[in-house]
Length: 147
Image 1 (cartoon, rainbow, N blue to C red):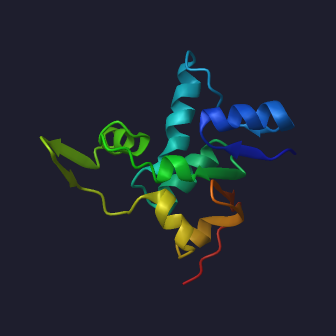
Image 2 (cartoon, rainbow, N blue to C red):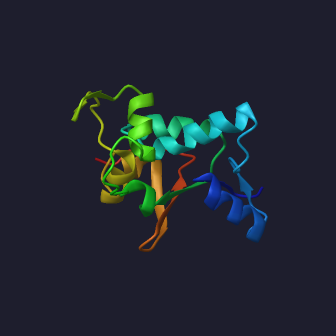
């Protein structure tokens, strides 16, 4: 069985074109099912727990998830327009009141927390590759709890 990759639609389009690998979504936004899969995949950039993201990715039968530094650490001056800001608002993890942003999420930002290699992230995901631009994690099919 071929590996299934999750990541941003633009990156997955390149992976599909270059390798022929199975991907969870493509940059085709006219299909409601693909839009939902894309939103679920983008949860790696939201304030979500390791367990929440794991369940979303397993529902898509994902084997590997690719976290992009450019999305995770987006430093645009205009807040509220970044992918992670839109996810936080959509997930109701933050409330905007004029120039102030209040967070109501217990978990930290998944894409930043997973890079620390702490439990519970290491229970669900194993880093298999990283460089300055990407971190690739294997979605563990069997969960091992390490404390």
